[in-house]
Image (cartoon, rainbow, N blue to C red; front, side):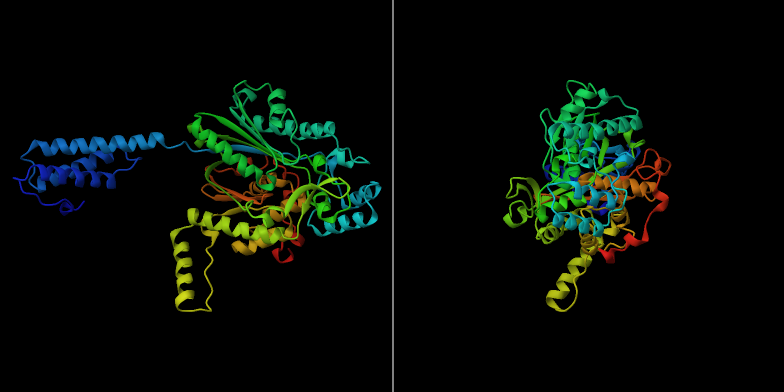
Length: 501
């Protein structure tokens, strides 16, 4: 510290000297102390200030030493108090992805044959769906639930419950086994499913099946679309901020038999072509000891939406057709609306996570274009300077390509997204966890790496989560990983090129 940083004072000024010393000392302590300072560091700062007093020849009056001790004590108490009030970190202990049985696999030939046998579909509808599936980037190994493989498809309440239990119960078992926890250890339960909202709710079904505690905080979300899991994580995070030493489970799933469309409108038939079985469950906690055993730490969540705009709001909406059949209408304006939403969302996220150098480059390029070089290009900040891995929406190759173009991502950055779309199809909001599982199976995620999960759903809304890997996880790559029996076959070059999207 610079001895001249405090003003030279005359000995005969008493009150003004004390006030000046108090303010200057507080400022100096605040500048040099922080919440993680050790007692030794605090003592060194105190001794430095005492030597400063001797240099300034203030040692003749004991009041200055008492004032120094008081300032030190006050700043220390405030810093420790701020640390105590800081919300605990939220950790991802582990996650599980549901892998359907092979009997649910649906090759393209079987899909066409099955669709042709359904009386409600005419030849034009079957031809249209076959064309969409063939060009969608889906493999021959995606899955549909047994209810939809029946002829005709079984689309009633009892089958919806069967499908839910078929997915959710093995998923919960796997997650609890991985974490070595009992269902009664869980304090918070959040489940999302867009198309199916039974009564009792899906969360109540889980509480009942596993005889969970009477005080478990359970929540059931619906209608949130492909961004739901990020919304569920945000909800769980807020609950963990106000409840100490808790475990929270967040589950994202879709009951496809409840969303099946049996009419002729092409804008509604797209859902039948792209969505496939899948579900993910993740275990979150705010326990301090979890920092050493968990896989990831939650760095940031962000939610934005454009539901206030009528044109954007109507780009994806569930409604009845002219024959009274319920389905989700996908409007042609969905991609432009998604592009605008993504642009505004990433602008806000960039301000929060990008390094200062990237922000300055962007600002300088904007100023240069406005005042000097009218034809110059504006520098687009690179999110790869802050993020090492990207989990993008698997709503289709076109959307993945547009996002990659907007964020300046290359083929390796979107490989996990394209391979997940190919192997498992669009699994709504749970797809991003199959993408992370792909990266883990490839042993690409290293300690200290940041992972961005980006979800876009109906509304429209955009939600993102940023995670930091807190321990090596290479050894866990094949532990009930949905890719464990086929990861050696990927990436597939024929579907890995962004230029084809």
